[in-house]
Length: 219
Image (cartoon, rainbow, N blue to C red; front, side):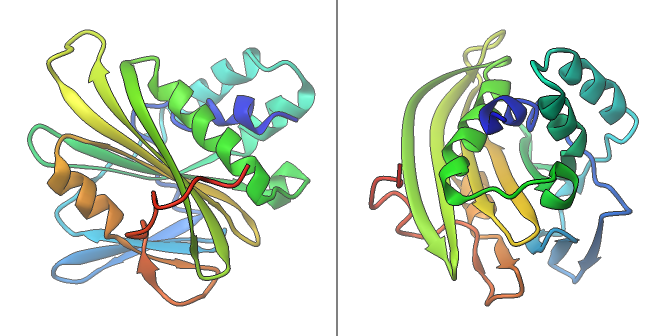
């Protein structure tokens, strides 16, 4: 089964779903923490507006499944959960997190699948953006290998609107997770990158390491 083909659906929706049955969130005066049963938490500023797209998810999945080339791919698309979607600032930047539980997929994934997932997610974004100047990297968060890509993007209908698109993917014990930011400026990108994550109950750390682009990602 092609993780890349399934991953094209990861950012198929403009703003993914927050699924109450699979996740919860808590807030302090300055931050909110999103928690997912696949095995991670992500803490972000409290003034980010969380968006619920639950009414559009089934239709989008059905459309994507119609384009699948096998029953396995259809199953994989049906297993994807749009975990977190938020937007902030004016003009707005957006952040999304998506998960693929292994219990639903029926198989495990490894770090070798990460580039396919991340690049597949960017293919979805490419429906609305012209993308250029990709920069790839890899790093570790505790025992977890992380794949990252940063690329410049311009809206196809409004090329004057410039963004930075950053995709971060890793494998957890219970599933795979990818985060994506579509940031209007460096401050928005830094806010995304500095969000604290906990992966499989390990020590908390910023989502993106300062050394993320210091070496080439593993093939």
